[in-house]
Length: 404
Image (cartoon, rainbow, N blue to C red; front, side, top):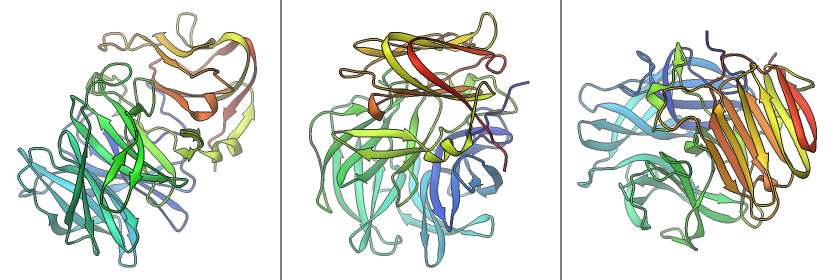
């Protein structure tokens, strides 16, 4: 029997991938997600829906959107709170045809209004995400190897603005334009070419004048682990959540009766670069000592390591030295999954700083160098943590409570 994560969103049954429609309304967190209720593999895409009082304790709601016999599957999109209710903008996909549709959450179900942005003749035309800019809405969506930008006054009639592209030889998905503490950032998920092979996420800093996004320099990986994809902000905030998996092996992950989880929400900030920290509400759930879900503060005094033990044979290891931080999951399950047993290594730019390590059932998330470096990995141990040992650092060990 697989242990279910305590502070990560998972479906009760079935398959989960990209987060969609992330929004906080009157203190309630809503997170919709790509969902196949019939199997633990990718399949006919619905929109699952979960709510939370704090971004950590999630309750699954009835399925919000289901495939339409004419328009097709419900691919990724976003949610916006308006005076008329919660608007759901998403891609309808049938065969090789993609177009953008608008629905409204009425009670616990999505009510389709209709197609609001027909396909202009592109093979890839999906994953809308909107933000408010001035007195209008601006939408980003993927055009395959570029980001397409549109504008609308009412989310029903959309006008093309511009395109943003860069020589990345891979499929682009789930783009989002963000303003982080006054700095414009474009985030794009890439199907191949990630930091540890398989999928990944890149970002550019730049400028947005209301029509064009112009990047300043080359892209940077948003997360340097293997399992971080399709991040989306909660509309109107600097909080972001992502799918904690990799397309390289996602369909074969053996958890059951579910497959797929989302990361802990992260607070984004800009301080000489993009930085990420775990949701602050985690601190309110800390209790000293070992437990099922760990939150470890590490203050290095030298090159060193933290070992999280699950059995005599199973452990996850985090190491650091003068140049790199690594996550070693070679003894943490996943036998038979392509590329799973690996050591993931990333340069920290001069100092690892203090590290924070979150471990929750099938995940490990490492935050280093004041949040400028993160590594997120799926792990598949056979049981809960049984011990933690530390070398080359002072450390504080906490477990997270998940009660009311």
